[in-house]
Image 1 (cartoon, rainbow, N blue to C red):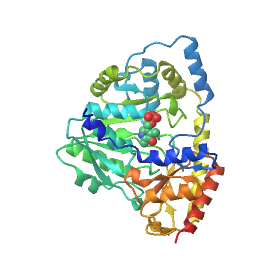
Image 2 (cartoon, protein in one colour):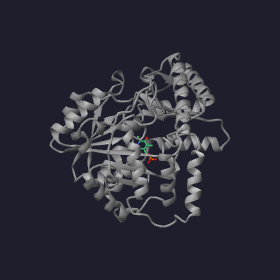
Image 3 (cartoon, rainbow, N blue to C red):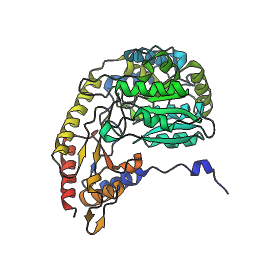
Image 4 (cartoon, rainbow, N blue to C red):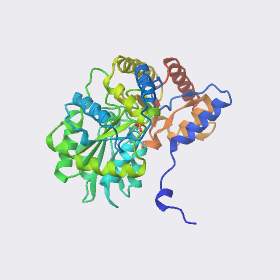
Length: 396
Ligand SMILES: *Cc1c(COP(=O)(O)O)cnc(C)c1O
């Protein structure tokens, strides 16, 4: 029987192969250092876990409204005020993680053939989510020399009559960059001129360093506010990846569509996780600060060590918890006679020879790079980077 053409067109994750290989090697007792982590390595703060236990005790074990509880929506609205944003609970939809929120967004705004501008290097789920909604991803390259920020003229050149939205991921996974006010203003201006949506994935808004403050593109102007669908969630800030709570903040009419869609697809996100989410958003912030400080220390350590390594380099990341290691100078070099043609060869050979896992940039549309996460211990960072240096020294 013929299976769904749309489902068959979804690419299996390129990162999966390396991650599966690394897991398998670990299982066999090998001492693998994994730079692949896409989630904080910290446990969820205790007061949040306690709230989940409380939710169970008081019997919050039933369906909630499909788009989330009013209490959690109010907590989200109160939290978004930190970015100078005013939302009403009717504008918020709580979903099963920010990834699910993004899925809802594209289902709500795209018609077949609608184009969505995606900045390269991109989070690898974006193109697939767009395709699932019958949309077409259109890629605009951002360069390392521009701090991985897209240029306004490049975005403008990609706009067509079919452009329905642009995705802004600020701070960025995988790049670790944060967009300047000028870049954000440029994007908002083009979106206004050609009348399309801004899908703003701000999941790393609390993970910015060097005294920088996060700017939400929705806060730039009345117009930007109206055309932005803001996506965020609790996974990264509160080390809650397994709890699956994400949300959107948008025009109320779009929120309503997404709420209806969700009501038939999944119903509400877990009632217990929603209750714990209120504790996360309204509770003490000392652990959030402590996690950020630890990420910051690791970030500095990585940039320092990479700066002293031969053959590779990196731009200093300003947000999230990733470093893009530039391996372009190693392309064409050989290991045991076999050429390193790109990031996939590099990642596979590094894992095989030096038991160190990195994510090939090809997965993000950036073959000159591999992504290293610093959501791992300082000890492992030092060990892993040492191994990468040894691996590079083995190349002819
Ligand atoms: C982790 C991540 C998400 C999704 O997180 P959820 O766990 O689904 O809330 C979304 N966007 C980016 C860029 C991410 O790195």
